[in-house]
Image (cartoon, rainbow, N blue to C red; front, side):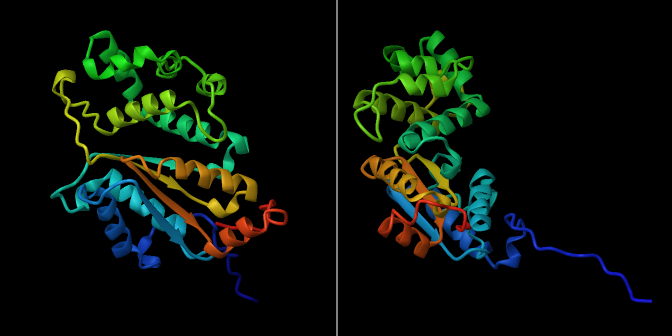
Length: 257
């Protein structure tokens, strides 16, 4: 009688055991590079590799190290927050920046920062009074408001950005979030000029060519603004082909992250 064995398949999900890829040292090095305050921002990090090489695993490991920073070199560490942005899942090529802002606001809400903002406004904390001057931004920190609906009615200055005034106010909100220290009284909060928001964008090569261009345009908006770090994961040759041949690169069925 033939011995029966189970059928085993290999999952396409990110591998949690980084030892299998030998990424432990790479992940720690990149996490420390991001966290070290003397490394100036804006900063752009590209993580490239073929399908199955472990790009997502490496990025998730870096993110976990930043979230649980016990292993990082402590001297000179900057304040930072992390955002995971799956750009290819979003709704509209012309709304990439709004989608990024929506993801940031949802993360702020999950962390309890938006509730803290409203309390700071009520108590008259000076750093948060600017929120009252922009009717759209003041609505966005209200957790009962549909973020997508508010972002859709904010005037834009042409694709892919909002008005400069709103951009400045939103960036100030992000800056306060980066430096947020909920364990301290509101009046004792201090701002570290080296702080950064770390945005992870995975599976960039899954995006249709037009959407890919919009994402790169959006990232470019922040390339002269301090306090932003972008880490992207993609197959480099696929990106080049999509940008060089947008007509035949609009589909994503054959693209893998």
